[in-house]
Length: 335
Picture (spheres, rainbow, N blue to C red):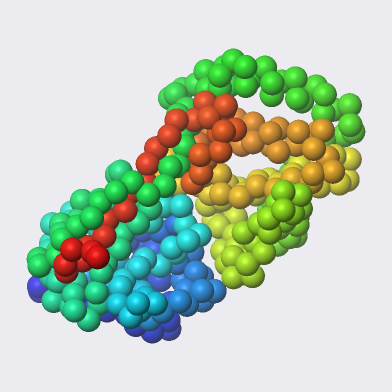
């Protein structure tokens, strides 16, 4: 049987696809937690900014490729295709079974090229250098604009590192040790990892601490957008149950003072969201909890990703810049 394309335009059909989509995710080496079907389906439920246009490729009925996109019209009246998860996902991509890349690439390109007047531009953004979408061919009759779009600093953890001395700069390791000694003078410190039972309560703590931190700087924080809050409430409890994320809360005596949400990829730990109570800023709880997260990555042999943003503190921990890419396919030169 020949490979064929099918397009999903209804959310109910997208939900029915999830078991097959999950299986394809597990078979796609470059995929990150942001390509998990539960995350993207949840994102669509919470945001729904246009019309679904999820392109599936099947071989003998089996799903071998999935390009999750939606169509919308710009303020200027031009149609365009954007990826599900855009805005709140630090890495985006398509999923392609490794053994079927050539054929899936051809069929995706043919589909987009044949509908370029209807669908307009096709934007692939927040692509890691190793992502499947970085290797897609330019559809016939279209041109490509390629550029760096975001910086996601990464802390490389040497294979077999036996302690943080082999991971962190000496000044940062010394500051971390000094910080723990000083912090213990404030009270009894402990770090709790959220369980299935405590997931929602811990998420509520993270939300509150995240907002407190950003309010102290005159900003609302990302969870002030109720859609982001709802997406996390939909996704994180299931991820905790499946071991795909870690949610840490630090307490001083009985008071939660910092929280950190980390997503678990193939061989990396992704620092997605943090929060701390500014009233306990002298405690340095945010830095202590970050150090604990990096230690967890060291023990499991995972690389530590700080994700989007070039804040100075990331580089003080020894991270190095790494660029995400944007590929924009259009049928004519952009104005």
